[in-house]
Image 1: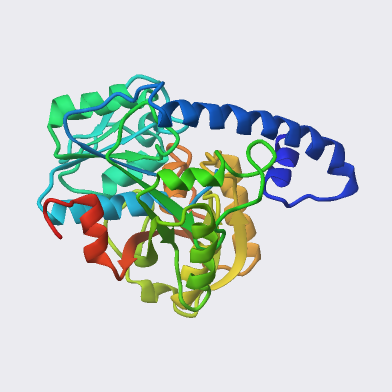
Image 2: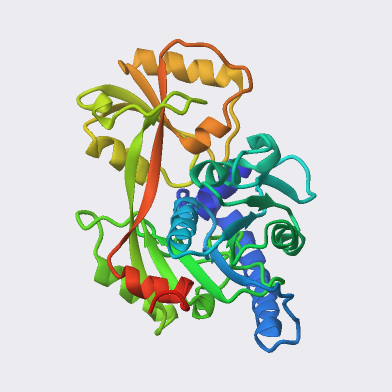
Length: 365
């Protein structure tokens, strides 16, 4: 049933057999739309009050479920703020982690907990940033307060917090995937929207992620965004490969390793299209694609089957994402086929000065 609902949510199943369930889900979506609209109205009118912190707070989030490339953008923005002379801390919920209490994932110099305790994405953020503490907690305000009291940052970045309005933020930045800008037309649980797309009016900026001139029409996507928020500033970012490495390793291997090689592409990210595109752009020949659910945690038996299937398909290497790496079974040491992790960075495409005026207005512009 879970798989069927997910297929309906992403419009992968539209047959007559699913009509009754789609109808029921649309009714629930209408209720959800009403509840989220009332909640947003109460916050907009300050009937419900957001709690604030004595530092600048920037939220990075999205309006649809599933991946929009938010984690690399969070790392990118933290790096830009550091370059501008700001001290930064990142606060995240830590989706699917063990425990609920606030936990310091990184103190800025070393990672203090495993990905099981932090969640896969906060662990990736902590690994990708130096001198940037990372804190997770289900209660975002308590986690942010812990981050401020312990590290006294100039700026706190809230990861995946556009709908978490209990904590006041100075700037809302929304990431939108250039491969799938607005998802389906319905709200949860019938579609992908977390709230009405008109919620984009709260955003100071939209970052189109995974943008590529060869695949995307920027003007068309911008028109879609401006239909919901006429005055929001729109920026583009692209994904660049920074190298390959063995799972759990640090030593980088050049991307030319993939040139002309038959590989299997393993991913547990919501939208793996850009992952495949990046591999192929670096000369890889993908002979097997194994796309797992977002944040999927592998079992040893499952991973061994994937390795065997990869060999049967003629692959010489299994290439996975950093999120897959964080979800490998503990102590897994089977080596049926060579396994490599693809590391990436998000890079802002143009308009960097305008972007800096939004995230660090007192330093630039």
